[in-house]
Amino acid sequence: MTQSFARILGLRAILVLVFAFLYIPIAVLVALSFNQGGLPTVWSGFSLKWYASLAGNAAILSAALNTLIVALVSTAIATLLGTLLAIGVEMRRQYGSGLEALIFAPMIIPDIVLAVAMLSFFSMLDFTLGLHTIILAHVVFNLAFVCSVVRARLKSFDWSIVEASADLGASAVTTFRRVTLPVIAPAVVAGALLAFTLSVDEFIIAFFTAGAGRASTTLPMQIYSMIRFGITPEINALATIVMAVSITALTLSQRLNRGVIGQ
Image (cartoon, rainbow, N blue to C red; front, side):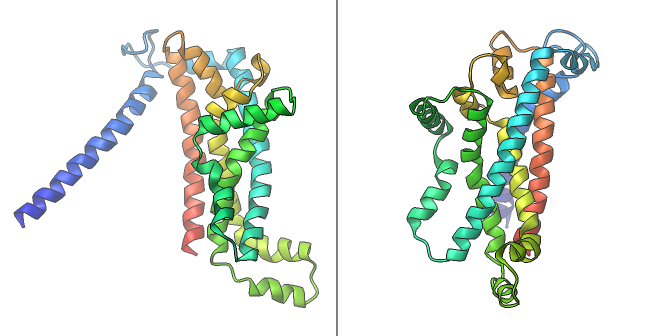
């Protein structure tokens, strides 16, 4: 009994240390974003001036707009294609491991490999790099995630209602709009939120597939360019905002996905 209690206590201590290692640096970053002084590591009073400074920084505002455009457009395309792919795969029902590997390869392949592959592909087609190439690369990256979330819902989907709808004379479009989509809608939204979160945070693929200049610079790229000259409270404030947006979207996605899996 004593050994069992000691083992449980030891495991809890390890768990606390792991969480402390993961989240104390993030908590420090958030706290220092409200630091009044210019030194990023010395607390000198509470202030919101660094957040106000972000609102007047043209480079950051431009990068934020580019990030929003990339995230929204790539999420919309990836959600549409990923949902259709999930439905197509599940309707087929018989598929080999090769198809599974092709679908989920972007989730497994390291980002640097996918980034180099996309850059090589765009260069081979003689594409001019810019926001459009970042969007296309993010669609490839996010499509597998959307497909996996929607497929989790389709695993418990009763396909007999689709057949019944067809027997009653409904077209394929009407059946999808009135029968299939209402059932899988929470999974589609969850997949879209996950794709949006990944797109906002993604740096490596965007860095390799972006063109030169501010016109195709995203927020992660802007943070990287700023941090090369040293960490400032302004960078802490920007990182806090990006993290807050990502956590919010990811939390909503997990809540919807939990409800989908539980159904």
